Length: 143
Image (spheres, rainbow, N blue to C red):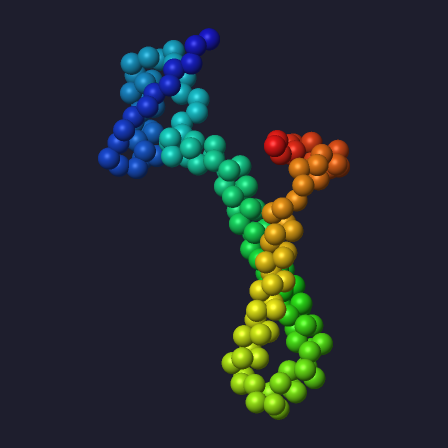
């Protein structure tokens, strides 16, 4: 049993030509059976669903991670400001401007962010070697 693939380029909707193509094939080659008739666009779309799903999931979890990170950073900075409320009040009473106090708080928050990024990027290579067995697809970095 051999398979025959027929590809056609059309200026109109390919789905509208299916009955005419069936008729031409039936008339000229009655022994051929037209089993699956699909447009190339549909075949390509169906072959890409896994990649689209992965891309969508990646974007979703990246967005979720961004939201959680923002909430965590807000909580840390809020906690630091709450701990220093008395100090900030004394500084402002002694003449420090709101801008200077705001810059100090932002600088302190930025230090926390930079330390977190450095801790995340500067992990040792042996850290990945101790991964659980369910992470079999992950490979430890090579030095």
